[in-house]
Image 1: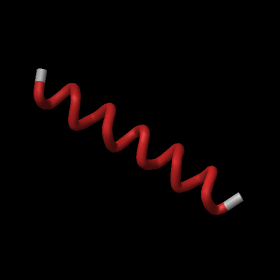
Image 2 (image 1 turned 135 degrees about the vertical axis):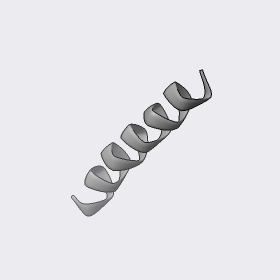
Image 3 (image 1 turned 180 degrees about the vertical axis):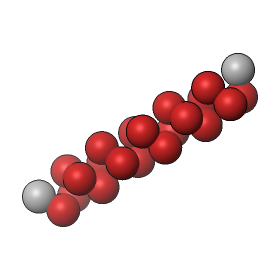
Image 4 (image 1 turned 135 degrees about the horizontal axis):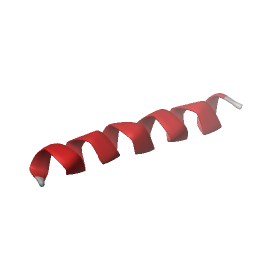
Length: 22
């Protein structure tokens, strides 16, 4: 579903931000 795709993209975005913060 669109929500699942959005969730996956959001998780990837958060992971990238976490890496940058580290």
